[in-house]
Image 1 (cartoon, rainbow, N blue to C red):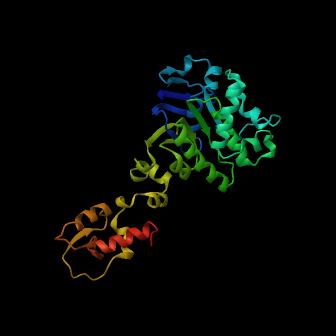
Image 2 (cartoon, rainbow, N blue to C red):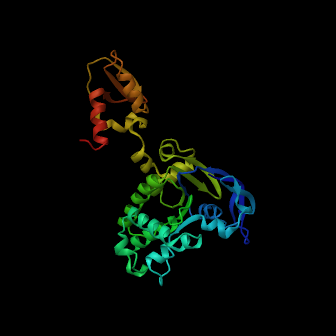
Image 3 (cartoon, helix red, strand yellow):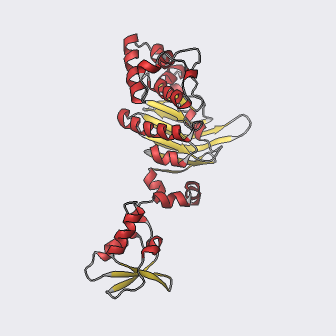
Length: 320
C-alpha cells in the first residue's frame, strides 16, 4: 500500500505542483492518475520512487517512510515504464531486460527464466526477440520490452508514466488490453499516469482525478461515470462519454423517447421524464400498472410498457 500524508510540492520557480495531498493507493490495484496538463499527476507519481522530493508531508510504502529509504535501493524495487521507453540501443533486448535482476543479484538462470516468462506474457516470442536490438523493433514492441524490463526484478510496485501516448491507435489499444490482462495475472500495485480518460476507464481499478495540485475525486471507473462528484469532474469526463458508458439502469427514461408508444388503453400511471430506468422497471413489475405515461413537466412524451423497455434496452446494448 502507498500512502500520501499532507504532501505539498513547491518548485524553485514558485510553482506549487501539489497542495496538501492525502490519499491511499491500494495494494494490488491498478490506479490511474488523470487530470489536465500541469495538474501535478506526474509529480505525484515520481514522489513514490523519490525522483521528486516533497516540500512537506510524507509518502509511505508498506508503512515505511520513503524519505528514510536509500533512493537507489528503493528505485531497484520499483518498476518504471516511461513514454520514451528508454531502452539502451547498444544492448540486446535480453541485456536490456536483465538490468535490474543483475543489479539486485539474481543468478543468470533465474533472470533468464523470468524474462522468458514475461516475454510470453506480453506476446513476444523470446527466441525471436531476445537477441535483437531496440531499433529492430516497432514502437509497440519496444514498449512491451519496457514493460518486461520494469517487471523483470519482480517489484511489488510499478510506475507507468503515460507509457502508450506516443504509439499509434492500434498499438495503443493492444497494449491497453495486454496491460489489463497482465495485471489480472500478476496483481502488482500499478500507478498509471495518463491524460486519456478512455484509457483510464478501460484499464484502471481506481481513478484519481486531479486539478491544480489537488485531488478532486477518487473512485472506480463505474463510480466515476455514475456519480461524478462535481461539475469539473463531469466536464472532464465529458457528458457524451458518461452517457455512452453509464449503466443502463441509471439512465433516465427520457433517453428512450424514440421507443415510446403514443396511444395506450391499458391502466397507466404518470411519471416524470427524469425517472431512472431501474425505477420504471420496478413500477411495471406491479400487476396493477400496465404502462407509464412519461411527462416532461406538463408535456406528455408517450407511453412505456414492459415490451417497449425491453426493445429499448436490447437496442441500446446492440442486441438488435
